[in-house]
Length: 318
Image (cartoon, rainbow, N blue to C red):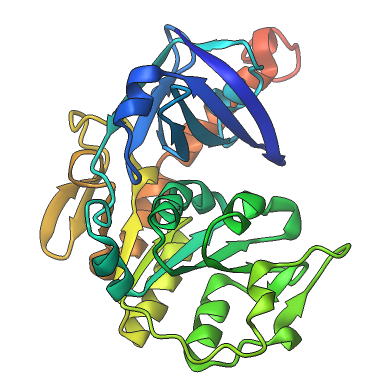
């Protein structure tokens, strides 16, 4: 049993959990994931580690409510317990273990879209603590769904926040900001504040030169990663992506997370979850993810209808 030390609502249907797990906290590295079961019969939910505190013995995850199990999970409170929390699993980021000089020479850019802000954060924090210079593009559909902005603002980096609906920060998706950074066209004309909130990137947008990056990490939805990789390939920037959303079992036994990386068959959970984004067939990934939608919808319907599901409501004839 693993206690929820802290729960915080980040946005609609998005919750942050800090979990008491001393052994996992001591072993966790940026890029790895864990598996959560809320009770004895609960579904195994693979989630990328958002943060860890070795001294406190805690790990942090961010959960988006997309189905029955995650809805039940987001109904839990501080002081409640998860039945099982297993990890760390998968491989650490390929940035881990490189020297400060090696990391600085890479000229690193992180591209975090939506929920991808959570798995990007421990890598960015790791570099910040080493004193490495890097940039972060933090994107969201809207200001109302933007998460972890303060946490990124506290890091030693240049932060560029953007929203698809142009409600806050720089205008448009992350790929727009990436192109503006690389051609030197980013400016206050592309920027919007709300209630006096200031994006850290604004401090330098008046004088920023054309940026040159040698390494990018892009994490978010499959669609976001697809277009980020198309853009970085055009710009000649090697790019790593995290394919954690394909995982089911998380231990290499079920085969559900199999993935073609170039001409090689890989399993996201044991070979990844990070891979060369320019070798991923994202159209196949998007098609694979759609296979689970009907089952997820049925499970959510059973949870919402409770005892009236199939037979006791008097209306559906089930």
